Length: 279
Image (tube, rainbow, N blue to C red; front, side):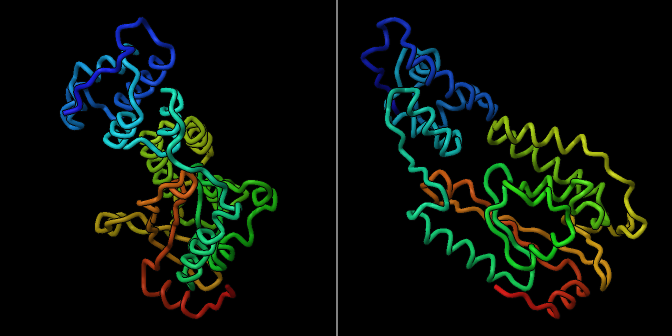
């Protein structure tokens, strides 16, 4: 077990150590773990963990990374804790439009285009649109232009009255699903911006579910929530899947999520197969 206590443990309260320890304590509490539970899981003495959290001991670089791994702390926040403890950030952080990420951006677009003729898009940690294939862009063809300028937030776009909302047949159900998903993401990330987005979307008035929505008896048989959309050909139904780069060591890449939509019924599969999109 990790047992060594830093040499500056008993030299009075160290501001750097105190701040880093407070951050680690916040993440432990966010994960709803006791000191004893984390110490046991991470094979660290509870005494040492207590000293770290109280600021009596400054955590080493390896200790920060070790505890962060067990607490499943996002890479961006691991760098924050390292900096607070007086260490250099460990995880690189580049924008997707930087040369270092040119190949990554091409890979993302290849995944999206490989999903055609079905919609797929990539978003960042705040659901800002990174890229979308032609089928996803077609879904957004009739939304208000002001929602497509600047940084486009996909969830705001989908639930806004000027966005995709008028075309969503099961809008109330989809709205509830989106809020539940955001609740989960806020719990994981403790991200204030995501929490603000969740509150904003919760305040959007939602019309009564359309009579064309799935009957309750069928709802009980489902194993996932579909996205049901109006179209000229008839109602389309999609199930979404989420893909993340689980082995990413770059902060930005670790925060990219690919949302891919698959046909939820034979009519949608047949209709999408008839459509052609340019890559």
